[in-house]
Image (cartoon, rainbow, N blue to C red; front, side, top):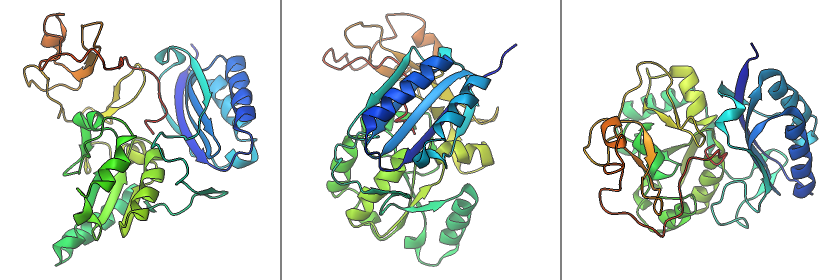
Length: 314
């Protein structure tokens, strides 16, 4: 029986012709029977694809033949092409839609001016040194670089979770003054696979944050190293039909049902076809259309949030 896998990767490198790269990537994936989502921009590539194991390996070999993509850091996980409804390959102005493509500087070695990278082990060392310091301002602050609803089911213990519904909200949050007291503190940003923090840390440094770090490889790499025996708690939200991942059988359930507050890590779309808001519900409340409804009232104007494959979960 054939094995199947999903891979996630990104690479910041200047691309002179993103449209040509887009067409090449689509042709490559179609020929190998892969599904997923790939975004190409003048700043590089961001991809999540799944399929038969040998096809995925062939895709990676071919992709790494492109000079700028030779050093891809690929993250593997269980899954198949069926976890994605289709293959989507698009060219956009930004790899992650912060809404400020003109602010980001990218060179041959990646993002210019971003935060210092920390391995999971170095993260623990930094946290330990901050905890041992006499000055409480040296204690590490975790800063969630994902959308706030993702943090409902999993986050680093004690993390700051910005009030963001989309990535577009982050710059307004940073400019609001809410986090000015952190500008002289050691701040560690984290996200699913690392890509959002590559950009977020650069924006934070431009706004006066003095000591900014990014968790290299994101939550995925941390989970591979420490599972649920470290500083992470809960489940990892992913933007495909799997919806979430756990790093071990010991994963805590920190989410709460929007209706009855029972522990849950399961997201469901509101049963109202005009709403479809993605919200946490326990199995009992999700079992009936009457209780699978937004408890505070639906918002028909909101676009549907049916789970879709996304590499902005990186």
